[in-house]
Length: 142
Image (cartoon, rainbow, N blue to C red; front, side, top):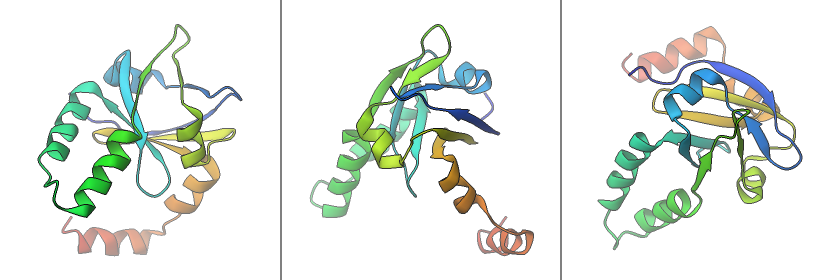
């Protein structure tokens, strides 16, 4: 199955309801996991992708403080979301606060996950010129 790709703009209601684009819902399924992401976004994972991710986390050494903190952040901050008849999910207040989600939201497909961004934050994070992108690709061996 193909990974998540694309960028979609939506609004989040005052109660925390967010429409998930049909293309993302098709792969995420009716129930999926949303958790804290890196760089100030949230991440949504299909259950099968989350299970693989959680398995990798469970293999981390409990004696490592970094591993314990990582586990707490990603697993402790996670919630199971279900889409309603209109294709919306309810994002808990704690997660909305973490990502600064207030009104305008951008959902971005990033392979095995969907990132959920405050649109203004996304604009800042994604603002990269072609030369910088080329340098990054080279540094990553792409």
